[in-house]
Image (tube, rainbow, N blue to C red):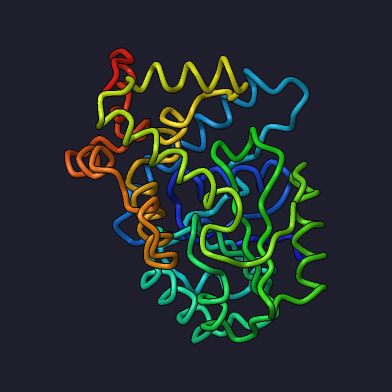
Length: 285
């Protein structure tokens, strides 16, 4: 696989993926909208660089000069691998993949990073669906060494081999699953988060109590509600909506508490407030 990678979507995950690629010695073009706050993207990359120096003894520190920022989707055309990380909205994602086809992205492997949208829906927009595969990176990307790799009926064996080789260069291991809404991780995780939020709504337990039980009794590192804050509560709600639409099962209908928090701008760690507060204490929501 060629050295240059195009990462589309410079949010938390996309920026972390771009950093990990640069850390592995690859040239990266990080692409987002013209109105993106590129100064904040650069600051996020520098924070990741400092974190690597502080916490990952012996790990290579990414050369940030390897990461070029662009507002032009056309800059993905010559990449050997395109990793799409745009917002969890099927219409937005379909439009991006259709535009990649129109621009002439025909021979590159296209890796789709989505929380719940079936990969086959997006592969239908590609020039060659055999080159499309799901890669569900977990946040924080540099710290988690396993990636959920999603195979559609059209994904070729060569594409799977290429993406597993690529992940290996990042120090990560791919676990291959078949395509379905939510795949494995989020089909299970989102139900757990949703039920935890409903327990808070019902007054059964506080977010802190729920997370303490999961940590102390089940060995979870964070618990479901702090994990939801890490993911982003807006992403959690959108993922549940995709699952609810696909499955038509009440357990996927987003809990009132989740909708209320998102409606008030409490999106989790990235907003400084979710089920917990960040930067100014950690009270329960």
